[in-house]
Amino acid sequence: YAGTLDCPELNHLRDSADVVAGYKVQGTFNPENWFLLRSENQDVGVLIVAEHPPGENWELVYMGVVPEARGNGFGEQIVRVAAELARKNGAERLVLAVDERNSPALEMYRRVGFVMWDRRIVYARLRGRES
Image (tube, rainbow, N blue to C red):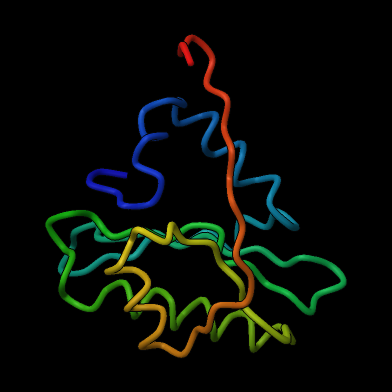
């Protein structure tokens, strides 16, 4: 999440175990759909996708590229892998959520063929924070 533009206000509010647990309950958990992207013997990104039964939707649950590898096309490669996995598994669509303020991600998703399908507002109540 280093330097994330997706809901940066929520960064550092959960520990890693809580984040991973949250990803596991998105759709159907299958560890074979969790990937680590490496380039030149370096970890550069991750991808988590999940099927949402009865299977017409697959979700790109999470993708990220480490800050030092950003700007090299890895994000597009990761998203194309997600789309191909969904297609090979019979999904009608691959869906994802992105913060509308994250213009680099929005532009990248548009370049690989995504279109806005729905718009939602997310509310969060954070323990220990005063209004």
